[in-house]
Image (tube, rainbow, N blue to C red):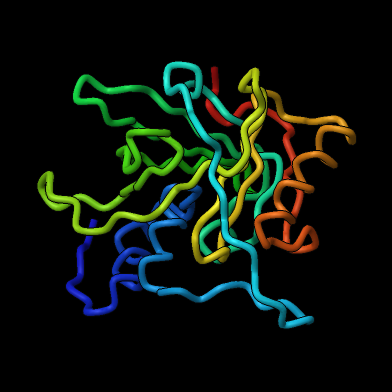
Length: 209
């Protein structure tokens, strides 16, 4: 894979994973580093409420497979047509291995691997993630905030302080309307707009299990 030295970390991030065609959750939130404090615009121009993470995330229950239910569209997921998942596993050093997968329109699978680290050890609700490594050195990390979580760990909401990115995750490929309504209420309380999210289709299992 060709690695170019580009002063724009956002461009470098895309170039390093051009052949993957698929950069999801941890990857796209990393790009928020280059976006500063930019937030999603609202027509009423009222101050946005503060983004609030959940009080606690039990990592041993959070790991495993998550299905993407919905996301705010971003250019790094344009290749993903359906069946987007994320798999998390705790490492011996306390960090998390991350594997993101999806299927493209041509039916081929895209996959990206990364690492997540805990930022707020009191709650485990704020993490940073990286998908760029130069011989083990990871210069770019992005925010991954858990702003909503089911008490039984059946669904989760992942946000970003810039509000440029957002995802709804679940342990199953679909959620019922009542649950989705509750989730979108949490999303709106955190200053997101429901209309910016697009639902994700699931036709098969991209992990091939």
